[in-house]
Length: 91
Image 1: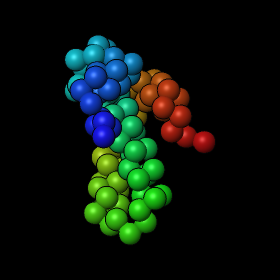
Image 2: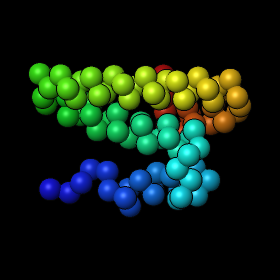
Image 3: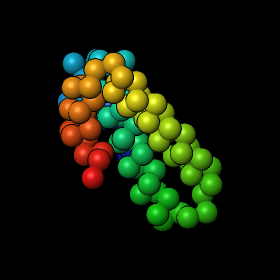
Image 4: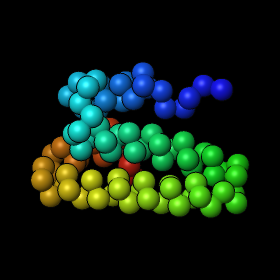
């Protein structure tokens, strides 16, 4: 079984949404990484409805992403709008 979040996949996410593939600290790259993990856990929970440990982990990740988005919105509204549009987070 292949690891769902291999180092190469992380670097792709950081390169696409951050400043470079080693930019692991920017809010945009972290939000993108959390979004990828949230999508993965959501798919897992659709098949495993009683996996409450994963459900809790998913809720924590959503909260972390929410806090980062709030921070980015207060700090730089343009960067916030770009990442929300790039990740398709709003309807």
